[in-house]
Image 1: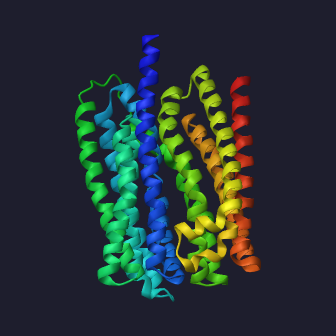
Image 2: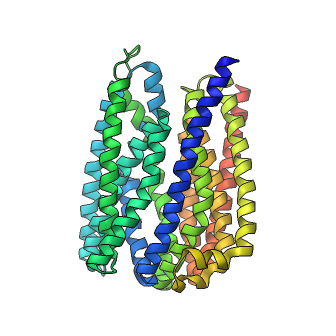
Image 3: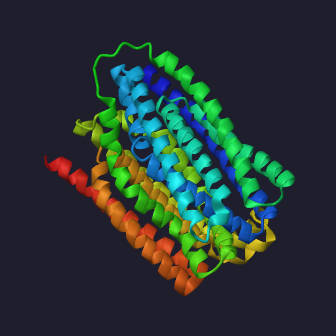
Length: 432
């Protein structure tokens, strides 16, 4: 009984920290949208969104071989008392990823120089820098989260958007209302968060490296084996999740890109705040419960928790759709600049797409906790490639409306497929 009370108390404290961090962070994200849509015209805001997609490309391709495995195996390294060896393997993996990121950035710069995007060279450099710093920040935050250092995770998650607001607004004020000025502010904010993350990581490593290892483990190989599927499906995933903006740039203009970007940020923010909080709180617990995923009794607990979270996510999505259906005009009037408000009627549909996508992400975390990332390879690749086609078709025939419809179609198909995949692997485990 006493142990149960302690466990509940610990979870309550951890949840409290995460709730505070998520709320402050999302308020910062919403304020960031408000500030940037006031400073930047829709065309400039659209260009900023497109530039950031290039940074995301660099991140998803370059760090796919390291980030997933590092965040998954940290708890197992702690369980084995082998944190120092794991940290060295993680540093090697991240170092290789950073080299790949720099090389990929140079390749993109070369492509921009010989194309119509030569004026984007400073944008590409800044966006790639933000992406590289952000990848290190995400990995360090994932390790802190796995170590149940919830206050550290919450603090960095809360401070990041507010730093972006202060520094981006200052850069825009002194350098002018340009995309490059905003990216400079974002870069400085990412660098400051990175420095703080690194200090806290060294403190954590000092404490946990004192454990005596009880197993010799090839962490480099484990990190690579777990991460390998992401190397293959991260590029198609990036193409799907960012082709909506590029399709609008192709068949419409940067103004449409800017309006759509603000729309999606508002539609996705609330549901992803909640799901992000849940994944941050529950993810390490699922990883810890499943361990090396060989104990079916432990896996059964992971199954139950995951499906409850999916159900809650879908219920909250329904609530969000209703609220935004009734109040979409007021929400836009409060949170974005006047030039962006003509697309407010699409907000409920973006909430619906975001909710289905978030539920699918919960199932992805479930599969990862069971070390079944290989099973996600082909579904993710097929859904991503098809999603790119659907986005371009939607943009061609319907502009912003068409792309929002495409987002709902892709999210629905992904959710159904991942749910079927999760249930099939559970049945397979039961039959063994």
